[in-house]
Image (cartoon, rainbow, N blue to C red; front, side, top):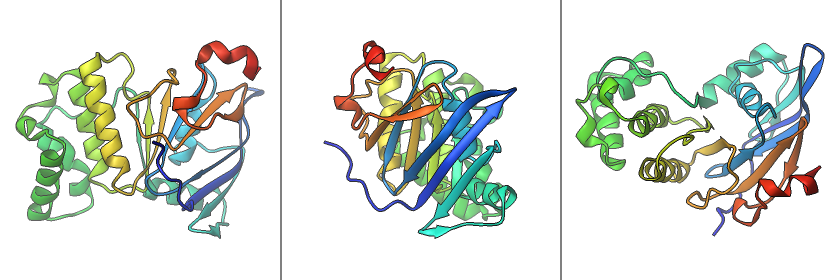
Length: 240
């Protein structure tokens, strides 16, 4: 069953980006609502990571218009970048974790926000318990498996309560058990009023509650509906 699509809280329209005379993204428009999960597919070099970095406010587009909670924002990129950064978290395929315990890694962003120790203990402890990671609380991150590291990184983002979570190939090269645990965590985060955007080379993501499937091809966005009903990459000739 697909996740119901609600009224979008954020829209970006007319996203264009080029580099060294090459068009990477051409007139891309996106919208996100609470509890939506958007699957973004495309071949290597199609612009998936570039788009995520723009959505995270980490990369300046050539042009783009931003609308938040139904209000069109003006003031230029510097203002919009700050708004995007304040509302989103972006995770690389191989996110950086400190050489510290799982608890300290998950608590990092909360400490930077100035929360007191009792509030941090409550939020992090509750998150670890809810995601069945309490047994790793005192484990140092250097001792974790790849799948465990990815879940800790996602949890560190989750406790910050972002409105938009951007995941760049979060389950690439994982074994099946690790992949299933990470995808289950993504579904759990989505149900917590977070809009999730996930990139993947693989359009078949049956364990996820996909709201929409978008495909990047030659700088353009192609809507493919629900990923469960989408053709696999063998349909590339039809797309072209």
